[in-house]
Amino acid sequence: MSPARRLDGVASSPVRDLLALIDRPEVISFAGGLPAPELFDLDGLRAAFDRVLSTPDARRNLQYAPTEGNPALRAQVAARMTARGLPTTAGDLLVTTGSQQGLTLITTALLDPGAVVAVEEPTYLAALQCFQLAGAEIVTLPGPDPAGWEQVLATARPTLVYLVPNFANPTGRTMPCSARATVVALAAKYGAWVVEDDPYGELRYRGSPVPALAAQPGADDRVLHLGSFSKIAAPGLRLGWVRTPPSLRPALTVAKQAADLHTSTIDQAAAAAWLAATDLDAHVGRLRDAYRERRDAMMSAMPATAPEGSVWSDPEGGMFTWVRLPGAVDAASVLPRAVANNVAFVPGAPFYAGRADPATLRLSFTTNTPSQIAEGMRRLAAVLR
Image (cartoon, rainbow, N blue to C red; front, side, top):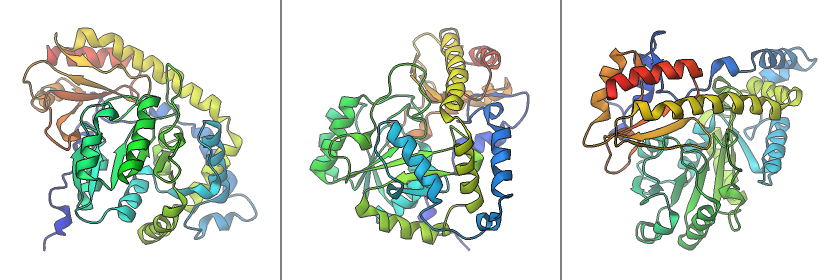
């Protein structure tokens, strides 16, 4: 028996496949976009789970729950989003099983087979998988400047524009405020929804925060904003959210009901308890301090690692830098030699929806300590040079 035809052409994620291949302690991996596990608030999360299982109504936290999510958790997330410059109420939010599910629900609610989705080039690999699985036609937006996107929107008339505006995966780029206003204006002009995927927004290491796409004038009925606890708490919680315009909220709720009824009751309750007991600003500050040092270690090592003629991004935050090697080299063909030298990266070609640039690769700097990064870059230099 064959799987459904909708899976035709949807390849397995090379990132996930690579993580299995390099799961050896001697490998210094720059491949996965993984938070540093030693920075998880293990004691705080353990105490939060203990609290919600020790209250007189603890059994309620093991019961079925509303599809929209834990009211206390939604209120806490809304308050933090408002404090960060995006006015939000608990009623604006749908809690999801990771922000990836939020993207899947949006795809279910908005995209019929053959619908057009516009994406930056390159873009987040799992988003491409999601759109391909839905049978969407994917078109690419030329360059990082939205001023040049109008012809694509006018010609292709996408239903949805998908963007990662803060410290994008895989490039590390951040979209300027003026460009965000342009995106919202173009979306309104051509009747497109905009998905603002923002898992990295709190991880800024230099410069000033840029107002969200969803905070731009005219965005209220046009922009869906995705957020996540994976980068600021722990990815194993599998907790995210969608901030959605009122007109789309019922459809997303029905899609969520059909997907899994609701996100884990106990995990939501524990996350709410953890937020209530934690100085989240201080916790995120510690993450920023640690990741800034790691980012700086990788950037400092890059000139001696990448061959002459290479170019790379210098991210203001997030988890990634994007490298283009000189000439016609194929980064995928270099990877086996790198793994044999106990270092790993992700070749860039799978992140492209259109014509790929095989000379590109992605490096993540958050998982390893500065000393591990220095050694890993030394190993990588021996392969690349």
